[in-house]
Amino acid sequence: MKGKVRGIITVFAGAYGSGKSEIAVNYAIECARQNLATVLADLDLANPYFVSRDTVSILEQHQIKLLAPDNAKAYGDVPNLPPGIIGILRRNLNTVVDLAGDKAGALVLGYLARFIDPLQFRIYLVINPYRPFSWDIQDIADLKTMLVSYARHHICGIVSNPHLVEETDFEVIVQGHLRVAQIAALSGIPVTQLTVPAHLFEEVRLKYGEIVKKIDLYLRPQWL
Image (cartoon, rainbow, N blue to C red; front, top):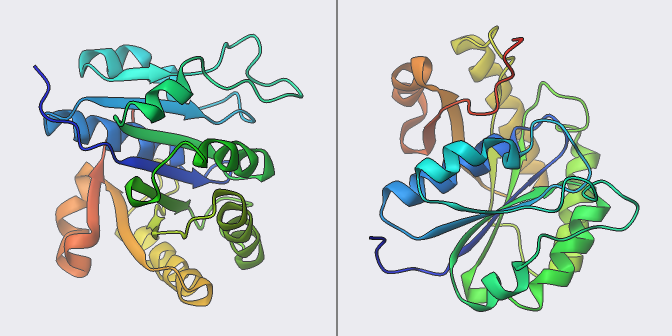
């Protein structure tokens, strides 16, 4: 049986290719392993590829409830929010949100923010400096402005997610994280987490310490 619910709403927002969906899935599973009743809300309504709702069988194994839009309507001109999302927010459940890092995502978050207690609200930006639209300082600044404006809540931190799929090695992570740290300094947002694959975790942690977080690749396509 699940333990006492903390009722924190944790949002991971980022551009296409940033890895935000992978981060959201990993975080939800981490919460479940801590015996927290957890909901994963897939609010990436713009991108049909590599989204958290593709991991439904894995989430079910961890007793994580998935909220996702109807696949047939998920990418229409009018955002189609998952059924029950407002009720979940009002029930004060531990909820992880996978959010598109664009204006549509900001609009959705702004709408939902009215149902969220600000003290239970956390927003994080996920940045992969090796992906287009994910690392440019102006893009990050624009996304930050949109999210803060619509959600009426500050950005808690940046999740540094530097990788090049199977080409990722220690040097790729070091150089990528350096770029993310520069973006963070210019943006005025702290880096709160550096995510790395399991085989590099110990080596990277020796260099960067407690901010390093090991993640599994649940959204990795079979053809890679």
